[in-house]
Image (tube, rainbow, N blue to C red; front, side, top):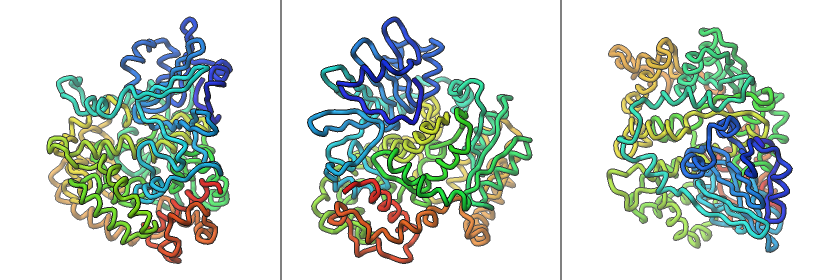
Length: 558
């Protein structure tokens, strides 16, 4: 059984019949293996390169997305990915427990106020919490056991285990560079005989993958989506033409805009527990334009792991989340919550007061509170791997799978992450959320060194920042870099104003305009409906929050 768009609901009563009706990846005697959402593991089991016991004892820790179900008679053991990125939920309704791969908020569900507050603060909900008090999200590294009598869930590999794996002694690591893991990961993850497409932008991460694919000698095309004339597309087109690679532009034009209601409905009904609708429709639009089974190579999370997390648009990571990650005391966390409430009062003050201690407890998990200086960044990466990746990117990846697109992301390979976190001294020396341009240029050198090994000629190509990659490692280039920074931050932004890659505020304009008067009754006691929600000209930050509330409003049923 491979990934498909079918919604899965498993109970003690139907699970055996469900898996009996599915074609297994492979059978070993009376044991049937089913792989959902991970072509690499499907290939490994199908070719019998991966043994069941080896998977149970070791390789389940390297599953970066999806889940593996091992069926033996009337018992099914489901191993989910180590990050919990593939959405799985356990709900208890009408005295029946069920496991599902989607979240549906019914009229009978009780809304969790804490979840709504966290959604506004982080653009997603933290930990196992969902919008419903009757449903929880399953943590990564879990095993869900189902038979005809019961459904149970236990954690096999928790954060402490993963933390030790990622930040452990470098002596246990192979003496190779992190980028050396890309080639085999991509090759092992492909659907045989299907087309290969790279989502190419003007930035660094996709340039590394471009080099890996050029070096492999295999045929591939490139693809970029965006509004007409955006810088990402024009840069990607030039590079593709330079290397005689066929490039396809998927325009986010009037035709795309006309399908917005359809795409929004798909996000709400097939999505995760957080109705995150910002900058998501373009992925659906792209998937529908690709051939079924396409091997789509992409670079989610690359820059976060290589250079450390950052925020700019505050879509996939908020400044609030960054400040929490740097907080060193509970009092500082409480101060950040109150400051946010003062500046962005989307939540009723009384709800914040009633929930403050629970919020501080949850947020401290991802802070520097009681952290040793040698591990000061551990909690920041804990947030990246257990929150940002599964809660923001996880639903996006599943949308690809639902459209039968085989998304391949070598940056979330555990082997790459371990090597990279030691190469950049992520635990103690990396400076997350650093705005200093010269410090960031120092980190960007990684890309130049990597390309020198992967495909040296690519160091002569331009990135969307206006300079060539080789400028990062040459004396003349370093002298010119400040000029490029000024051009990028001021002159180019002014020149290209009005042609962003995406513009979800424009896409959702009609929905946002009528949002205040169409607010779900369950949200009215929680949200401050007389505040920023009614602003006719919201700031870019407030516009993001309004889009979140729009998605929230559509997700919740009265």
